[in-house]
Length: 165
Image 1 (cartoon, rainbow, N blue to C red):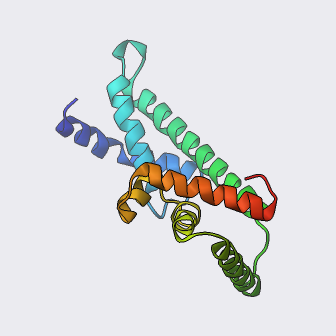
Image 2: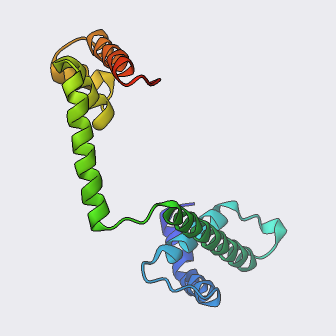
């Protein structure tokens, strides 16, 4: 199907998309549901088989079902976000500042136990989540050297803290 033909189909069926959006009770201020309806119209126009019924009935059905699917997806996403937010511990400004101070103190203690290169590994790999390759290019050393820094840092912290890392 060429673009000009689809544009004509879209112009003819724009009201149908808006009808289904209103009928489903959706407030589409961002236009995301209309866009979803357009995609459904495009897919329906590609999949339509004349032997199975009228085009208008087919596209109406496809648009309506696509919008319902999108509403369900949107609802599941909101529910997942709600559950995630409920699981997070409540934090206020005081707690956040206190945690940052405790973290700073913790990292100062860790740094005092390690050599400079071992601290570089902790700083880049643990705190900033850099890969071994990124650290090696930043520091201008081989990947094996960075891996050794990490191994020695873990061993030293295990010995000092008597924990399994």
